[in-house]
Each structure stands twice: as structure tokens, then as C-alpha cells.
Length: 324
Length: 263
Image 1: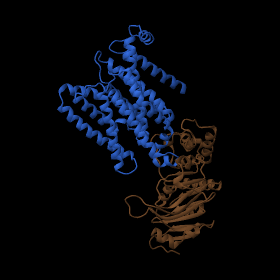
Image 2: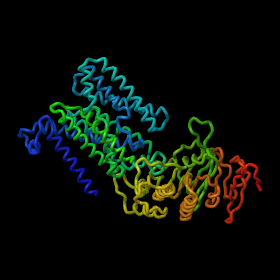
Image 3: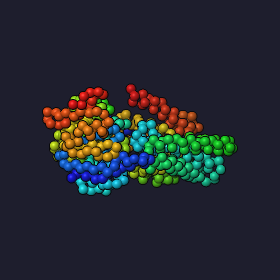
Image 4: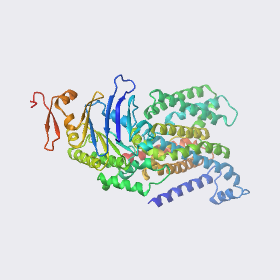
């Protein structure tokens, strides 16, 4: 059973990566993808190596990171409905990006950097608000603060979009819905640099997450440093989500749906759950990206639209199965 | 002495009165101490202070000779196991996985559980009579089974001091008795035990010593016969109470209906 599950997952990952390299405005056969990967002079080389490989890898890494963030936050807040964007990150990141787009910042890095700064500012504010209620970081207050800060940033964002010109509004709107059209080896390198340390730390805390998922008191009695772990989990998920938003805009539902789906087939212990969630989240986002760029070819739909269109029915199905 | 608390005062932010005022108690191996008292008398605060969850405003709590605040969490969990009042499972594990959580303080972050850890889990499951349930999800257990599983998890920590906060709340008579029998057996086997309970009569039969709290203060301390005195209980619980003696010699408390004779 375990070997069958591992084989299925490996097949899903390899299949999604292969499909990600083959599908697009110019469809390629498996042979062409293979040639393009290993022979620099092959006609498909530029498409495979320069356009699709970084795009597929970035989508995989972002999908995996968002899914891991979702799983870690769900354990930390003890709520299976938690996901990274509930903590006000999307609002902050969106506000940063829209501000950069509306002010016609010229540099290609201006929007991602503004989004990153916006997300971190929102996280800081949410954190500060949560602490105002008491010296301890209460997950319930954290969630409420996230909703409040997200709504406030959303209102400011709407005001800026209404006041800016039509092209600016469209650009900002498209950017907010997320996509990997601008992926490059450089953006992949930047994202990896941000993601590796928080991902490794969350993996290191897998057992502490098992304990924190029991509640503060039992976790404390079983040896967890509850408050310190909670702060660091929050910091790591904030960094990962901010880096994701900066790399490809706001992509919702990955952090919510993927951990749920994985829990239906795997044990909820984080030592095995987190790697599985990472791999599944990566494959899910790569496949969503494939759909986004093939379903209305040669146009591309924002990948956030696809993850929501797939994620919502999938979530409803999982919810029904869980409650049945 | 495994647990030694002297003159402990705990105050919660925003409240004028101390939740615990100059309370002292001590527990040693093979001794079971029961803490009793009305609702809000400071029983759970005492557990929180002993486990390092509530900071102490005055006085000192020592576990195995070291002040509780100086114990790193992971190390303290290898000496002190606490079964708290309530616990709800959001992501239900199996019984075996739940009991293995008791070993986490002893397992490295990337290491797999060793044979020694698996042995400790097996023993804890056996001692609490839940080995048959090992593969059952914890959300499919009855109240009594869930309490036994939580005690098994505490035993898997291989502690020297076991603290139970109202372990028999919402359990029926059989499960209450089974639980107190189990705790007594564990204490006779070498553990030090501190149990918070509203069951004065069971506490009187199973505990070696009792601590009666009221309004955060210790109002009586000693053997069950020394603590469960009619006048003291009437004052503390603000209700007419009679005390009789059971055939094993332990005092038994009978709350009286209004107008009932006390003698």
C-alpha cells in the first residue's frame, strides 16, 4: 500500500513536470522535450530550457512552499481552514504591487519587490495587532488581525486601482491573479534563496508541529517550546508566502486544498506529511499552470483563476468526505 | 523530594486577587497527593505553576531539586508528565501515534523512534490497558478510553512525577474507579502522583495525603482523615456536610439536604 502510494506520487510528479515542459502555446512532443533538455542545438532547446524549465521549476517550488505553509499554519492555529493568505499577506502584497504598478515604476523588479515589502509590512502589522491583545501570540487573534489587515489593504488597493488609468488597472488586476509568465532562471534563483531556509526550518520543526496541533497546554507538557515555535512558524510562513507573491502574484487555495487532500491518504504526523504536502503542492501548481496556458491557447488565464476553479470544488468534495 | 512548592503565589494579569496565595506542598516517590477544593479555588493554577505554564509571583517550585523555571522544556518533560483537564484533537492520530508523542522530548528532530522508544510505548499501552486500541483513531474512543490513552502518553514520557488535572471529569463510576486504581498502581510502582479532583471520597480512599484549597489558599493539609473534617468542609464548600468512616478507615463525605440531620 505504501509502495503503491509512493509510486503513484512519483508518477504524478514526473508526469506533471513532463507535461509542464511539453504543453504551452507551442506544443512539444516528449521526444522534442528530451532533445531540447539535453541538446543545446535542438530547435526546441530555447523553449524548453529558457522558457519552460524555469517556469515549471518555479511553479513546483512555489506550489510546494504554499502547501507546506498551509499545513504548518493549520497545525499552529489548530484550524484545518487556515491558509497563508488568511493572515493578511495577500492584501499587503497586493497593495504593494498595485502601488508600484500605479506609480509606473520602470524596473522589472519593482512590482515583486513592492509586493514582498507589502506582504512583510502586513505580516508585521498583523503580528503587532495580535500581541496588543496580550503578550502571548494567540492564534485566534492572529487570524482576526489577518482578516482585518487584509480588508484594510484591500480597500486601499481598490481606491488606488479606481484612481489610476485603465491599462494600469488591468495590469494590476492580472498581476493580482497570479501567473508564471515572467518566470526566468533568475526569478527561480531569487525565490530559492528565500525559500530554502524557511522550508528547512519548518521541516526541522515537524515534531513540534505535531505537539502544537494538540493545543498549547498538552504541547507544553510534552516538551514543546510553544511560544517560540509559534513565532518562528509564523515568520517562516510569512517569508515563504511573501516570496511566492513577489515571484508570481497571489495564488490562493494551494495552501488550503493540498494539505487537506494529502491528509485523506497519509497520516497527519508532520514528519511524513510535510514532504508529501510539498511534493503534491508542487505537482498541483505545475498542472494548474499547464491548464492556465493551454485551455484558451494562445492566450493564458491567470493561474490563480485555475487553482480557485479546481480548488473550490475539490475542497467541497473533501469536506463532504471528511464530514460523511 | 520530587516536587517541592513553598509559599507559591500566582497572579493573573487584570485580576486584583491572587489565584494562588502562599501555597506549599510536596510530593515524593510512591506518594499520591490529592488536591481538592471548590471551583475557582486555585487547583488548576497550582498545576499550571508546577508545570511552568503560569509564572510564579512569589515563592518557589522545585522539581527534582531544580527550580521549575530553570528546566529546559524538553528536559522537564522527561521528569514531569501532566495530563491536563481538556484536550481536543483537530487532526486525529491513532492511539499508538498519540502515545508516541510522549517520547518526542527524547527523540531528535530527524531521528526515527528507536526500539527503546517503541518499548516504552508498548509498556505504556499495556499498563493503561489500551494495547488493543493501538491502531484505532483517537476520535473513535469513548471518554474513559481517551483518558487512559492520555495517561499512557504521559507514562511514555517515563516521568518521575505524574500530575492529573481532574482525570475523572465526565467518566462513569466504573471508569472513575478503574482510573483511580490505575493511578494508585502506578504510584505504588514508584511514581510520585499529584491528582486534582472534585471526588473527595475517592481522593480519601486512594491518596496518601490531601491538600484542601479555598480562594487560592491552602486551608488544610495532611492525611485524608486530617483534612476531611466536617467543620472545615462546611466552611470551604458553604454547604452542610457530614463525614462518616468507610470500612477501610477512610473518611467519606456526605453532602446533606437542607434540614437533614447532621449526626
